[in-house]
Length: 262
Image (cartoon, rainbow, N blue to C red; front, side, top):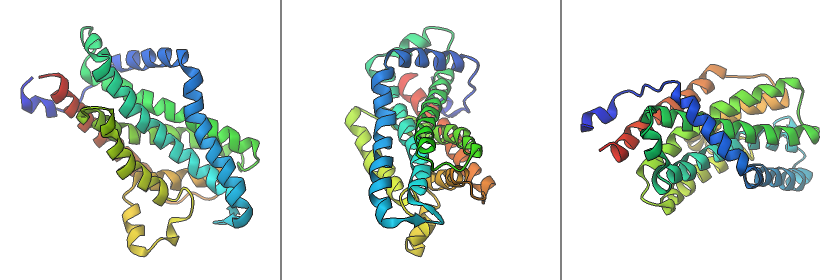
């Protein structure tokens, strides 16, 4: 493929659903360790920090600290799940197992494959968000049925973080390469984006910076839905998440074309 054609806008078709279906069938065979990884760790964070720190903090932003933390962890868990799937699993299928080579021998295009992968990353983010929301409901920190609207938000968060993760997979020479992304991108966002404390406690300059983080907008959407508070700036938050998803998908497709379709 000529170099300039790598950057043509992606045109995925219905084959993306076949890739998504293939991944969910494989996932069903590995559901045990997948549940432990995607459900166990955030639940431990929620229980340990929520009850531990919560007993000292009491309330934060006019809600019990456990409710504050639960809503943040729903968003951050969706981010982590989509990022992990978009890097490690996509790289494994693309480079180690050569699954994409087999797929490309069928009528599927690379655009179909990556669109299917992105949908699958978002689906796993949805599963993760649903699991944490269930735990939060059992602990009595969910305001009401309106919290279910956090689930489509978790799916959008998954799309948002799947694109950048697949960009890393397209650039990666090996698994160790992903440490850069997790240490330099995912971890700072997790700490600074309002998951554990309100961002208005940060210095003013830092508050401006964190507005560029998609996780900040993900938390800002999820928290009011879970806690039953009024939503603010919905269009802005949705636009930021959708923009990250769209740009991330385009760059991931272009870079993967350059890697595989030479």
